[in-house]
Image (cartoon, rainbow, N blue to C red; front, side, top):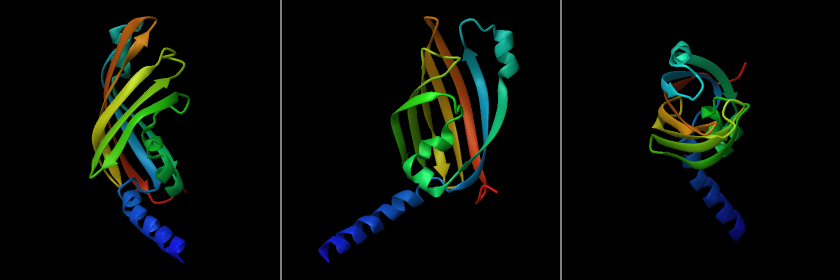
Length: 151
């Protein structure tokens, strides 16, 4: 009986933390590249990619409960190691180190922003090296839930 009572208290106290995260469903994301200094890529090419890019994603409640950062990940082919993640009282902090085919040496991706269960806005600074030269990419992003299910 005592174990059931303790389990009930733990489950009840965990519920508000889950309610403070992202809502499950289909999401629309926008990323706006503000600036990019990447070795080997001329600024005129960077300017072609500067501006807004959009993507859609879909996440279940169990996915968001165990890995809420998945909603913010833009490159499914990247291998990332989370360094810091905090979602509390509408404030979001997300730092991860990612490697992908364009940045095999890796980038530290540091984001700060705000969120509600149905939306977020973030400012991101990505730093690292490419071929031994410094990389610096500044972006802003936003997302909103557009449907409660993925269909």
